[in-house]
Length: 593
Image 1 (cartoon, helix red, strand yellow):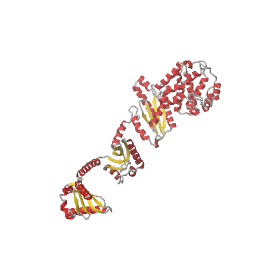
Image 2 (cartoon, helix red, strand yellow):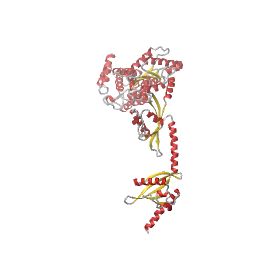
Image 3 (spheres, helix red, strand yellow):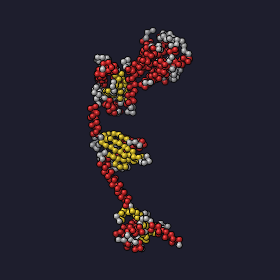
Image 4 (tube, one colour):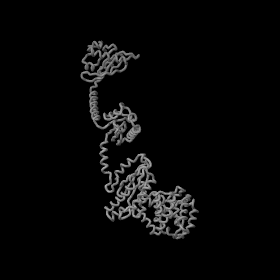
């Protein structure tokens, strides 16, 4: 009774499944149709039950049904076929009904109407074909990759590019497998990885050779493909040939690369030239920067037309000295830059000396031609040219401070004047210390730029005293411990005054440390030996000698021989022994007793 009841349930279940369902024996005799099957094929179960397919259906259809059933029985797993019924697309899932031993007892099928799905697929395919046609018609190369940089697709232009180079298989491969230049291919993949990490589009230009061996310039853009969850699954790239455009740009650039006033290359030309020279074959690259002295005075007193004549005269000197080995550019209003390939420091200094000498010999009716010059060297491709220029500019700035007619030197003069007005230091003392320091620097074979910096340190070494109370500075007797501590702060005050100008950072450090001692007992940092900047050590010796040999409010001068003995006595404790020897040798040979 229970089995009969279950049988009715199963039959009712099959009859009410909302898809056509059929069951046949393994001998193709018809066992069951549900009403949806009857409606689809306009056939009643009662009229064909127990018959075979060949007896129930037209011979051609029966043959197809039998083949499908035999295939399913052979594979003993679900077999899927598609067909057209009543002008609709259907999909039939045919599967064997197996007993407990896995042997087939019958065959069943469920028919699903897939017409809507097929229509959607057809529409999607239509859209894909339209899109493919559009993409293939685009004159640029288009490609897309997965997140492992493997090519997933591309347009005809991209495919033709590689076919002309003998590459037929692209899908699933990376640039390393299809691009002829390994290093360039590696760059492409590194670039892909960066794009997929940053999720930012990247634009770049790239030079390649076409199928005829001619170099062309490509403009490239790569865009990451990000899903709704923010995950990157790949990227899309586009490349276009911009060679003709670049040629036109080059022609326009040529027409605009010369500075009209001086006839030199202009700033734009400089930007292009540094790209051209940024190769190993041009290193080391010498960089000389110049700032014309006196231009503002000429402009203010004689007019800007005469100022233009001054600039043309300087430009003529630079062009004459540097041709044909160097490139001269007008960098700004009164600034020039010279680039000299395969040039070291000594060659740069030689060029600077030639320019200085030529300026002195040049016939300019209103004033002697003068230009502050600084040099630097770019040794490696990794160095940034603008970092090198900044360092050179600092040297030019220091030299400008030494020029009496320069605006910046007036700042230094005003500070020195403040000291003189407070009777703290005399101009003579500064000049003597500067002279002694430069003599020591020459004996130590310092470079021109280093001597310029040393002269600045000497001129400004006691500038911090303007921040110390006059009662302490001018006290005739010995200072108390507290007063001496205040006096020692003049090095730090000088450092802060000078360090306000970033170009004088090294000068400020030397001023800060010119009272440090060789044995580490100086102030304010307690530096030892060569921890103390060289120029600070030089100033310590020169300043100490001048203080000993000239009257001060708090002491009387001693003789030169006694001062030399004192320098030697303190050699190795207060003073650098090498500097003491250089200076005492100079004193014995140059200064009478």
